[in-house]
Length: 282
Image (cartoon, rainbow, N blue to C red; front, side):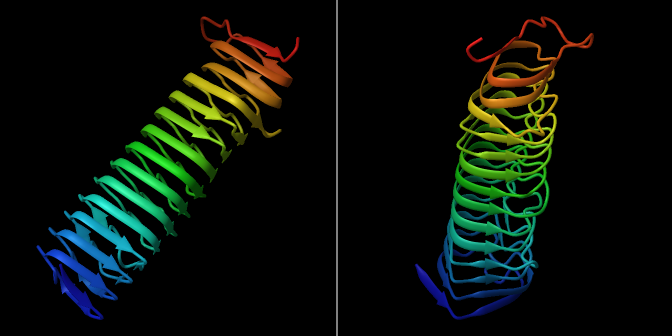
């Protein structure tokens, strides 16, 4: 493997179609597609300022690096990436990719990141700002996530999340086969139109959560007092610890809570309209 260290590259495609390179303390300056159509690349202690540096790259490692705002859309159409200890200030990262492993990564403009990606494993990931992270992505495992981005995990499939704090709006819409453990989910309209969404030991805050959901499971979850009109038109099995303020028109299944503030069942409830709703011990 060839080592290139303490260098600067700019312009268009300076390292195009390179293979078996270790870039250390290298700066990619203004320009486009610096490391395009490459394979077996290691980048350590590098700075990326130009657009689209890693497109159509196979089998690469990025460690202790920085992507400046100008390094937008940096990782597209690539596979088998390992990224660690890296800060990203650029938007639109990770598109049409597969086999991604990331650890200790902070993304400060998480606009449209992880779109249409497959097989993502992330540990200690921070997402700030932006909209629609993880949209249309599949086979995702995350342990340690802090996110204040809007509309996270829309249309995602086969997702497992542990130890997350997500503050958002309209999260987990149209998802399928998603399990979330030991996490805090803050935001309006959580999990609408989801299929097979499972929440375990989670705290939920925000208005109108978990409506139009099918195959919804809650185990040992708690709800903020502001959570009203929960579970409208949902089919679910919910075990709620503590109290829930209001339940509205669930379609079917069972809801058990320590205390229930009120239940709304009106003429708009959908068949079969046979959901069992009860306070524990009664």
